[in-house]
Amino acid sequence: MIIFGSAVVVIALMLMVGAGVNAKKVTHEFWIEKISAEKLRIAEDQAKAAQKAANEAKMAEAGIMKM
Image 1 (cartoon, rainbow, N blue to C red):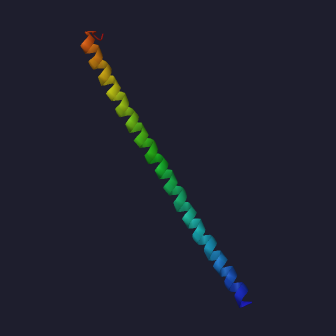
Image 2: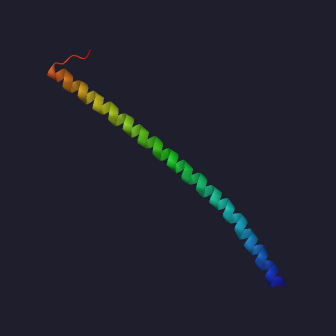
């Protein structure tokens, strides 16, 4: 009876600890996803700005005026 009771207590503790760990993992994955999306957005903005600058330089070199 003691063995059964201790097994039930151990399993209950494992379930409680596991739930906490899973919650932390989900939160961690959420923030990793958010950070990755923000880094991608920043990289796209920088690439867009660089392309715009290159196009403007090319147009200025060709002597085309922007209206």
